Length: 323
Ligand SMILES: [Zn+2]
Image (cartoon, rainbow, N blue to C red; front, side, top):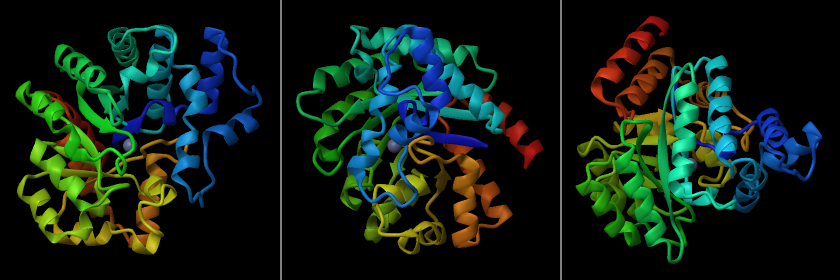
């Protein structure tokens, strides 16, 4: 299996957080596993984006040192290997790991070390952040993606409050990324509507994080198909952040029937307390996802991966054997 949309902090398990806290002497609000779990995950029927986002506060504490970042990436990849993943793209915003004075470059280099130690293949996606006055920080992130592209880094992303800080405002930044030929995905069509997706496609995004609200506009659907842009859907997360009202309104089948290329992902596996297997199960139980369709979705993830062709071919062989 392959997961292309996974945030580092939101995917760290209680065990990993406790382990790094011990190793790095980080003080946590609690050392009780059950209590910690409550602080880093939301109930299945969560109805608030705010509660969802608050869950990254504790994992963030253990990813502010070089060793902490390296091991967070490494331990997470070990867990994913156990779950049967053959490839994953882990994303994080380097600028959000500077609480102890690390530079963005130190953050990226530490995460690359974690990837190199892993027994499964992985790439990093560096997130630029939506927010006031972040152009310089974001530009630094773009430059780092260029410097370490295909050396541990696969591409870029744009994350943060989509409804408040519109996608169109990041045109200059992604024009620069485009000129540098850095592949990127953009979180769009989650908290904001189809226009946000349309803007991201115009910038040259190869994939869209979530993008489920593309369903609100047929022209945007056509544009996705025409430009061969893949959506990274994350069912549990989309339901818990109220990007859709409920599972009945989840446009999975509609998007599939219209011909949009979809990939299935976890987003923040520990906030949602889920796994990629469980995300596929949601689609099987609620939308009658067939075995062939599941295969197609997994090959989509391979095709959409931010890897060079020869690397994809290696993974294709593993996928062919397993599916
Ligand atoms: Zn996300």
